Image 1 (cartoon, rainbow, N blue to C red):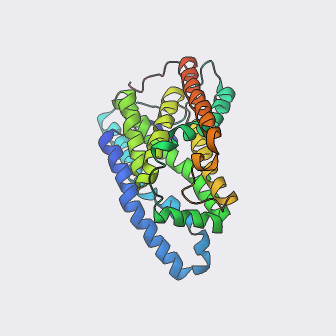
Image 2: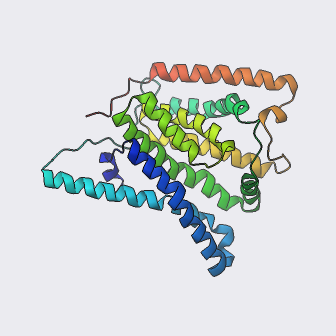
Length: 283
């Protein structure tokens, strides 16, 4: 099935359908599963997220499978022997190499979060996010698997591996990256997460475009979510709306911010210079 995805390149309308199915139908399926588990297997309720989260991706998976089957049937009827094939994961790290790229990415994500935090820190934390944070504290193992393992894998395959890869086939890189970042932001279903999700979605989209490495974006997503998880679980005394500026005292915050800004700009410039010119999706 994974290899068959290499020849599935959704355009914007199909990408919007995929995202809509996940948000609307997937959410309904997940809610029904939550209710069913609470009534039928109440003892399993603390671990229900491990089952429920993947269900969000079931409706789009069915849609994508139907498109692949229909695409193969049409190719057979029309006698088409060749279809555009663009691998989901086709890493190329240019003169930087994979190891140095991942080291830079490791520090870049923390710096990027510091730099972009003021854009969303003024908003209040929604109540349901506070509930999610409390659930992390109450069920850390289940929460870690959902947030730091399932989310990077499922969301990156869908948002970068399928949607962005398809959009890059039909549109200019920046248009494709912005559309995929916007969809990534909307899927979080609240403004508090939407702004940072759009920004880091744009960064991940750009890195995927430059490197075609799905593992690189999964790594970024893992780091980003794991950091939030660690702060929530290891420092339960911190308020839900804690920010870098509220944690790092006085002038140290401004020094930290300037260093983070310089590192972010420098890292992106270096990656842009050292990575090879991306190969077009267009066949």
